[in-house]
Image (tube, rainbow over all chains, first blue to last red; front, side, top):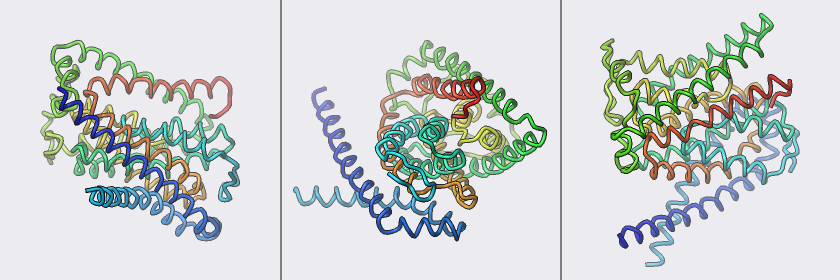
Length: 83
Length: 306
């Protein structure tokens, strides 16, 4: 029973660390998009709707896929460093 | 914060919190959450058209995050998801055409409101009855005790009807090894088509109809229905986002801010499903359609579209 509790606590801690790293990356991603692409996206929405539509979908899917992969690799890297 | 695409001033913290709440609900129940996101964006002054399109864009990102988490637990049936996406998209187009027909007849708001209230209340009432009855049964109590470990054995008091539907041998029969179900392709298409029609007719992703339909009509275990519905939402919401963006209804910067909260919430919601058995998830689902009904009743009584 004690072992199960310890395992659960370990899993929860790993999940929370992953969540914190992921949250930091998501916020950074937004500010990068806002800073570098904000003006371009505004122009695109006004003049090139089809391109804007494609970029909008890509930005959403890209954010979710890319950032989760980066989080996974980052955590793996940190754990390897800790060992 | 000023968002130049829609010309709206909205607090990013507010958007993040709304996204987080919808993310948790989406990850746990497999719904898009547009019945909350739409009014939440509308309240802070975003135009209705932007609220609908932007909400769909953030649903895409949130669903990708939740699906990846659900997939890690083996809760996504890709084959079923792809088949359902086809039916949903066709149904959504027909639902949108229905709306246009009613607009021409001049009574669209009243008809849509009454239909949606009836649908929402029916779903909630049925799910209360079914999940409560299942949880009180011996099989249900065992399933609740084993939690997610027994998720492939998902008892339901409506199971006899589901089994008789699975017995309709209308070719082609589709075997879904991940869900452990063999069923006629036409039943899957019909379920997704009906969900799609409601999505086009009432707005949003209609996860509140599709998720219960997958459980009660197709016989998909609840955990798999949640994960697969989210996968199907990625496809249909991407299509909806593209279509709305072309019409100038998407502020992608607002969607990205909402996604910062939603992405975190979706992971928490998806993990949460691992600690609850199917009937308990279904019972907890009951308030969602009721919230939708309450919003529609409010709109009907006050004339203010939330």
